[in-house]
Image 1 (cartoon, protein in one colour):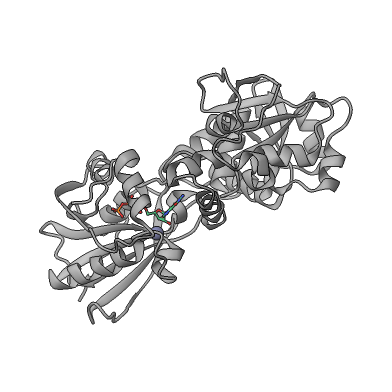
Image 2 (cartoon, rainbow, N blue to C red):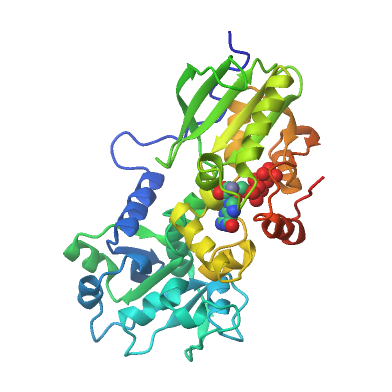
Length: 383
Ligand SMILES: Nc1nc2c(ncn2[C@@H]2O[C@H](COP(=O)(O)OP(=O)(O)OP(=O)(O)O)[C@@H](O)[C@H]2O)c(=O)[nH]1
Ligand SMILES: [Zn+2]
C-alpha cells in the first residue's frame, strides 16, 4: 500500500493536435543549438542567426561569417566582468560587436576560461577593447537557450537582413525570441510515467516514481521511503543530483552523506519522501560543473567559478520540487536542508514548511572551504 499517489494536480498545456506547440518548437531550437546547428531568432523587425559558441567548428564558423555580416557575441554580465571589461551596462545579458579580425580561437576564449590561460588566475584578467551593450531579446533568448542546453552561456549572433529567407534557404529553425524567453521561464508540467517498489538499505519499503517534464527535458524522481503519511507534515528532502558526491563519494562536497543521512532519517521517522531532482551542478550540468571544479583548482571559490563561466550562483528551479510534492498530495513538510532559500521557495509555491530540519553531515578537510563559502555567500546554515 502506498501512502502517496501521484495525481494530476497541474493542468497539462493544450498541445495542438498536429503542428508543434510553442514549447515543442523551443525545445527543437534548443536541440539544434546543442548540436551546433545555427538557428534563427527574431524580435520584431530584427532577426539573427545564433550558434552556441561552445559548439562552433572552424568549418561552420567560416561558412556563416561572410564579409557583409557583422558578428556579435552574447555573454552574461558575469562572464564579461570576468574578462576584465569595465563600465558594463547593468543588464544580465550583454552583447558586443566583434572586431573584424576576430577568429574562432579568440571567440571561443571569450566564452571558455579553459581556452584562455591568461584569464584563469583570479588576478590575471584579460582585456577587450570593444564596448559591451545591453543585450536585446535575441541575445537574452540565445543565452537562455544555451543555459537550458547546459552549454557555456555564450552565443555567436549574426544579424540578418531577411531572417526568414535565410532560414528557408539553409533549412534552419526560426523562432521568436520573446516566445523562447517566456517558455523557458515557465514552470513545467511533469507527468508521472512509471512507479515500482524498491527495497533499500535504509528501509525495505521503498518506492520510486518517475516524472517526465512536458518539455522533454530530463526526468526527476520521487522516492517514498517507508510509509509517509500525507495527512501530517511529511519529512521531505529536495536533493539536487550530484554525480560526484552521490555516486563517487567525492570529499569536495557534502551531498553523498546528506543523501544517505536523509534516507536514514526518513526510515527512522517511519516514512518520508526524497525528491531526487536531476539538476546537476546547481543546474549547470555535469560538463559545466567540471569546468567549475577546474577553476576551483586554480583558486576560485564555488560561487566565483560559476560566475567565471557566466552562470549565476545557483541556476536551479525548485518549482519542479514543489510541483512534484503537490502531485503526490503532500502540502505540508518538514524539510531536511541547510539552505533556507529552499524553505522560502517552497513556501512561495504554497507548500507549508512547518520545520527546517538541519542536515549537517559529511564535513571533510576538502569541503571545509566549500561549505564556508555557502554560508558566507549563499545563505546556508550549518546548524
Ligand atoms: N556549480 C557547482 N555545483 C556544485 C558544486 N558543488 C556541488 N554542486 C552541486 O550543488 C548541488 C547541491 O547544492 P548544495 O549547495 O550543496 O546544497 P543545497 O541543495 O543548496 O542545500 P542542502 O539542502 O542543504 O543540501 C548539487 O546539484 C551539486 O551537484 C560546485 O562547486 N559548483
Ligand atoms: Zn555534491
